[in-house]
Length: 232
Image (cartoon, rainbow, N blue to C red; front, side, top):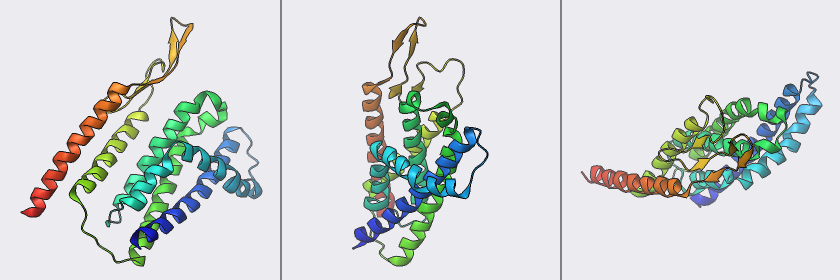
C-alpha cells in the first residue's frame, strides 16, 4: 500500500513538472529567438506541446527511471532528502541530452541550456518538496530502513551532485575531447584531429567499471559503519 501511494504521488509530481518544464522551455526558445511578442496563448501552448517533447526526451534518456527509484522504490522518510536528489538527477540527465543532441539543436535551443537547467532544477525541487509533504501527510508509515539500501541512496546522491557540478564547469580553451566523470572519466566528447579528421565521442568503459567499483566499495563501507553505529 505504501508503494502504491508513493507511485501515485510520484506520477502527480511528474505530471505537474513536465507541464511547467514545457512552458519554461517554450518561453525560453521564443525569447532566445528574439521574438519579444510573447503572448499568453504561446505560453499555454508551450505547457503541453513542449511539455510532451521534454517528457519524451527525458524518458528516452532515463530520467524517469532514476526518479522512480528514488521516488517509489527508495524514498526517505526525511522530507528534505528526495527534493535534494531529484534536482541533481534532472541536471545530470538534461546535460546529457544537450551533450548528445547538441549538433541536432538549433543555436536558439543550445543557448537556453543554462537557464533551462537552472529554472528546471527549481521546478523539480518544488514539485518534489510538495510531493514529499503530501506523502508524509497521506501516510504515517515509518519502516526500518536497510543500512545498505540507505548507503546506496547516499552514495548515488553524492556521485550525482559531484558529477553535475563537474559537467557544468566553465569551458576553458578548446572544447574538443572534453571529458566527463568523477572520480574516473567515463565519457569523452568528440573533436577534430589535426583540424580535419573527426573523432566521435565515446564511453570509456574502464572509467565506468572503475566508478562502479568505487561506488560499490563506498556502499559496503558506509553500510557496515551504519550497522555498527546503530547496533551500539
